[in-house]
Structure formats: structure tokens, C-alpha cells
Length: 495
Ligand code: GLN
Image (cartoon, rainbow, N blue to C red; front, side, top):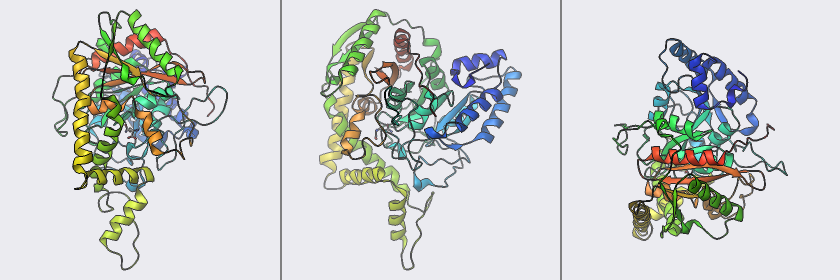
């Protein structure tokens, strides 16, 4: 077989089982593609020895007729999943040299399902960012370029390495995490599919925490079917995470019929925000028409508290981050600053954190400690928690009215140039998340599906938001949209 790295997970699974290809062959093809793609900055720690061992073990299992769902499938893992004995730095200097003694629940589930790990993937530092420019390893680069210029573009963030690697066919699929959009926005920027499941679906145990009430892991894949397959392997109850849901997990792939007749799709009027390009508006209208043509009922809905979502998120997420990141003090993990004679423990904490955290992380820690401080707790943090409940209730009311899923754009623009936002106000960067953060605040599942190319030749995504715990239904609606769109474009290889 040729072009092995271009295979989708489902195709590779079938080819492996049919004996048309071995996991060793697939894995070597991916390792070679990765070695030829350093210009993308996607993989930050390569693990070829582990990959070869796991591929050999997978081939033996396939031969023995004992192949679990992802047996022999080569994947990349976002750097903030703790992987035993393998650097897991969340793209931060402060975790330099950290090799966990344990495996995150999500990666151990993937390994139990037979996955082959090719290496760790670039990301924004501690998953804070929308462009992968806050990484201590340097940028990841989008394999896509505008049709009329060769400027390097962001793959989005924070799961930028995952998005770039999947879009460039360096691996068959990847893991991501999404606190405010970090799976869906990079998926949209690179023409791939990414789902953030309901909060509590995937265990957070062993994932470096950013904002614990918002963080969720999810798959980033070449199509909707692959997302369904991966999500099945990644999720499920975990007693080690007290927020993990003890609910049965349906067979998501089996739910992909493409039949959405009679489903009600809501179009929220508050998502028609000022300053959105006509192109994104037109894309949204096309998506709506496609779902209607597939037999869904389209209704206009109102989610009145939407305009407060970004400010609410940018109080809650930094507050939780400032608490979570307090553990990086130079004592337990990673980097420790060198002290001059006469300097003591407080100097050690201060210097370590000043050297170890990049500017965006420092900004979040400062904002977080401020909104949690005694004098401002009620004015900011408590207020934000209340508004969060109202945002959640907006969705609950829409679902109670019979809405099955909500269609919105995934991002307000296509991928932008690396460095383009450097001198902009940080709020400009935060605006990237305007369509995605509501979903995390409400704990709902959301998926981004490629929906076409814009006038510059760059991919654009549409987002579908589902009812809690109904990822199967959501994936099926996304599958219907994917079939209607028929997106097959790939970036032209330049790296
Ligand atoms: N871009 C958002 C932020 O910077 C979301 C990041 C994420 O989902 N991890 O916080």
C-alpha cells in the first residue's frame, strides 16, 4: 500500500485486520514523515523506540486474532498528557526534565486499545493560547498556506501541534485538550475534525491541569468516524477523577447513520457578532441549508447571555490556573532556579517561577490571583460563577424547547499569520474563542467539522454543540454535515 500516513484510523484498522499492512509498516511510514517535517514544529519529543515496540506488540496481537479497536494505529499525544518515562512538559520551561512515573488515564486507555505512540505534540504553554506561540519549544506551523503568499500561519492553539500533525499526515490521529476551544479552533484552522466531549466524559487524571472545571480531553482526527472511534477508546468512568462521570459509554461509531431527519437544529442569533467576515456568515448559512436538506428542522434560538461568555471565561480560567499552577515551585518538578549566596527559599520560589513561566502564563497567574484576592473575590470570581450559571441555563432552556444540536461557526476567522498578533492587545487573541468558550462554561459537547475553503484557500470550520452526554447523536449530526460538505482538500506539501 502507498501513502500509508494518509490513511484514516478506520481505513488503517480494516487494512491491518485484513493483513494488507502491518503496524510496523504504518509506524515506519509515520516516523519517516515526522522526520521530514521538522519545519512544522509539531512533534517536540519523538518516541521511535516506544513506537516500534508497541507496533511489534500490536502486530502480534493482530496475528493472534486479538486486536482491540485501535490496535497498531500510530498516533501523536499532546505534551500535557503524562506519559510514563517520557517528557511531559505542557510546553513549559518549568517542567523541563519532568518524566512522569505514571500514565494518564486517557493514554493508558489508548494503549490498552492498542495505540502506537509516535511522540509528544507541541502546544501552547499550559494550554494557554490560541496560536501555539506561547510554547517553550517555539511555534507549531500550519501545513496550510494562503493561496497567494507563503507566509507561515498558525495552526491555532492550544493543541496546535496535534492539529498540524494530523493535517500534514504525520500521524493518523492525535489527542487534544479543550478548556475554551483548544481542540475545536485548531481543528478548524487546519481542516480536520475535533470533538470536545461533555465535561466528565474523559478522565482528567494525569493531564497537566489548566482550569479544572473546564478542561476536557478529546480526539483530533481526519474525519468524524475516526473521532467516534477514538472517543470510545478515550472516555469512560475513572475513580481517580472525582468529576469523571459514571455513565455507560455507547458505541459512538455504530451511531453514525447519517440520518438526521426530524432532528431540530438551533441557530443562535447572538452568535451573529459584529466584525465577522461575510465569508464566515455565508459558511454558516450554507451549513444550515445542508442540515435542512438532510431533513433537519432549523429553528432560530436565543442564548441571551452569550456576550458575557468571554469575560466570564477570562475570570474563571485564570482563577483556576493560578491555583493549579501554585504547585510549580521548583521543589517538586522540573526547573529550579540557581540561587546566589545568601538567597533563601522565597527567592528560590520567585526566581524559579519567573524563569520557568512564560509571559502569557504569568499574565494568567496575575489575573487569577487578583480575581481571587480577598478584596475582589465577590466582584469578579463570584460574579463570574453566577454568570456562568446563566450561560449554562441558556443552553438548558434551548434543549428543553426541543433543540437537539446548535450550529455555529467554529472561529471568527481562518488561520492568521504567525507573529501577526504579537503587538496586539491580548484581548484580540482572546476573541478567537468567542464561539467556543460558552461550550466549556456549560460543560457541553462540541465538535468542529471542516466546512470548506475560504477565499484565501484556507480551511474553515463549523461547530455543532450537543446535549450533555449525547456525543453519539452529536457525532451523527456532524457526520451528516460532513457528508453534505464533502471536504476532501489537503494542504500542498512545502515542508
Ligand atoms: N484559547 C483559550 C485560552 O487561551 C483556550 C485554551 C484551551 O482551550 N486550552 O485560554
